[in-house]
Length: 360
Ligand SMILES: [Zn+2]
Image 1 (cartoon, rainbow, N blue to C red):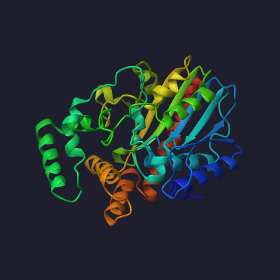
Image 2 (tube, rainbow, N blue to C red):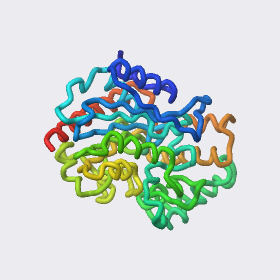
Image 3 (cartoon, helix red, strand yellow):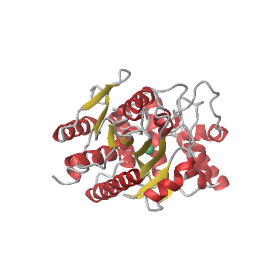
């Protein structure tokens, strides 16, 4: 089977390929059902988890997909290629690899970045007993981001306002304002929510079960939508104390939003926080691998359109269908060369992570 054939066109297809691949490898799958939502085709939604390596392993690598829903076409394809290709058949001693398929199955199925509550899970991992952080810059741009109509005068005015904002403040500040995360506008984008989402709680359960006693926890969380076509940027996430180690593992290719070396703006409330909190004794080396698709402004516009569609529009209308195609194209390049590129970079990175874990 070719590399592209292990990628899928829908969440259901991707899930079935993952389950089949686990069966072929003799791996048991734990399936966590999301009781709060259904898929685009009315199907049930699951976060599926499979573990390779001994139960007692003290070093654990998580390889996860679809934190951002529709970005899961890429991550799932990498996971299935790895399993079906027979990779990692002999793991180094004392190491386990845990595959988490579809952290956000609702978003994967509906081809959305957010979950069933319009939450961006990578802004949702917070201590909710503390006051939520403010993002005054987002407040300034919210009305431009979410106009009331998508093909009329409100949209035109919004585009003009964005153009002026960027001219005045620069693209980096616009990106930071929009994508930094916010907890005020529940119908806005990059909304972090006001409590832990189902995926948050479920991921913590998975982490506690598989890495609760671990001495070293590594994560590769697979994303798409930022950076050059098919290139996988390794973005360090979490507590900066581990960035030097991450650079040793990954040949000095690790970037960091905080130091301005990444295509991503600084964000907080990311999933690594939840995973690491459940493994209190573990040293952490967490990285997001972010694959480029189409230019940033087109990705942001697709996310805005999708946000408008679910706030004010009709998914089954012609405009709705056009927007859904726009969003899919922002997350996933349905082209063989792109799939070959993301897979090659993916497996090389996973192999580096295992070498790094072995030495650490
Ligand atoms: Zn993402």
